[in-house]
Length: 229
Image (cartoon, rainbow, N blue to C red; front, side, top):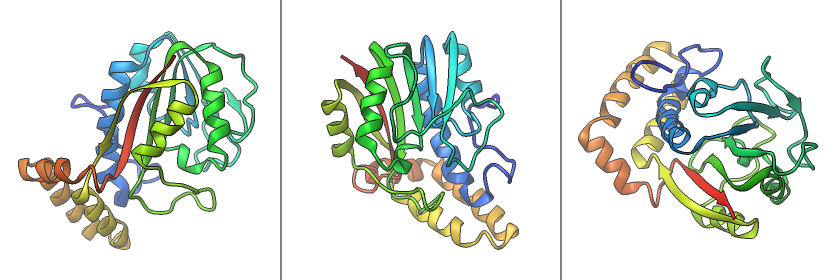
């Protein structure tokens, strides 16, 4: 967190320079979704290094951090280490909010995880979920799927959720600039120049218009808010 809002880490060991443009874009999406919908007892599922703790801390009364053994982002803040492709050994209906960011694409058995999310949430509890669409293969070999808006809605319908909102984030400009960024990471100078000018463009009026206009057909990813019935 900064005084200007949530941005990606500037620590190269946490977020490489080639990923900062996208990370900053997604961070703003996370911040808005958490501010509007995170409440009560929150389960940070697939929490990694818990980068969003400072964002959701003011809005919740407690949090539980869970990740699996396969994660590349080991965290000292981890409460439990569970296989997210199996039954999660936590008491049913104990969470008001479940946060699951950039995790679903790494789940081999997504139907099982959705069933578990529904079981763990209290009635009228909310899930805050984000997942990439046009994004490079990452955290290999545990990168399995990309989901459209339509499949995310089907997951909700099949597991007793009402969709509050589902919005694409990013569009063709972010995708193109991210692909370039990933291919010039060999040069810190080129990467820094690219990041500066890309950030200026993305935050300009024309950049924002192009992104918004293209996001439905060329989404960088999706942010889903759904409420258990």
